Length: 340
Image (cartoon, rainbow, N blue to C red):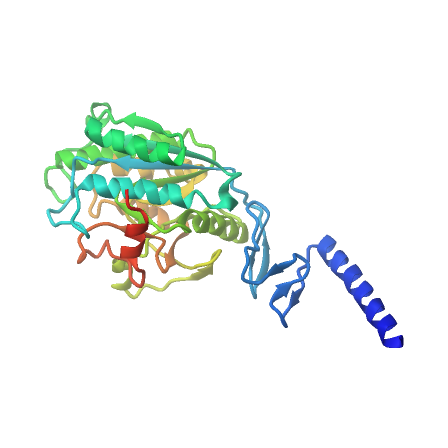
């Protein structure tokens, strides 16, 4: 009888202790069964709350001070051009529109995560020279997911006079490159109208299902820790392993991230960063640098840019390209999951 009373007393005190810990914002882990008793969750369940807290065991909780207000995805499409700067075939050797459709589908699949349902997300497609048939295929993908989007047909003449016709290598800038620069310029103008985060993305990037959630949650976590906005690149490019640069490691939501000094033109950042470095970003649209993304790299000398290990997205170039196949991921499986 005495043992029963002591057990009941212990259970009562335990409940009181748990309630106090909840009110104080502490989490209690029962390492015997991997249960977080203050949250009634297992350790392998989702513990973080968007805009509130980021929990990564065993490092504990990061209070979110940099809350994400919205995400604008600005997708630049051009189904009529197979490869911008080379003639080699892309991985899987399909027509360009196939990569565009799977890019869109992979992004929309990534947006289905329940943790993102209350986040304001807008989708803008800036298209150059795609056929009406291709544009209809793009529209059908959005309809299938019940997602609205804004289509902007690029007017190159609006920007052409601002583009220097000879590039930094002393060569004539191609028409394809001019349209690419004009599309980037238009996307930057659209970014100025956005409220918070902007994901600038090209139409040949296949994304994992967890990509956008990982990027958004990681953005909140790391920018809250550093008390400053950052830049995120979703791809773990092969060329990042060809150098021996000193780097920094960061713990994101479910991935490891590292500081990088170079990206291509697909990245996520804030309107604040875009406005702060407006002249640098726009310079990429007026002069073809060597490399083309040199203005971005200049920004990364002052602002933190990170990429995930392993990769969250694959850039579809030729299999031998140093800008393409990200290592240690079954990309064929991801490709098949996003069959258009």
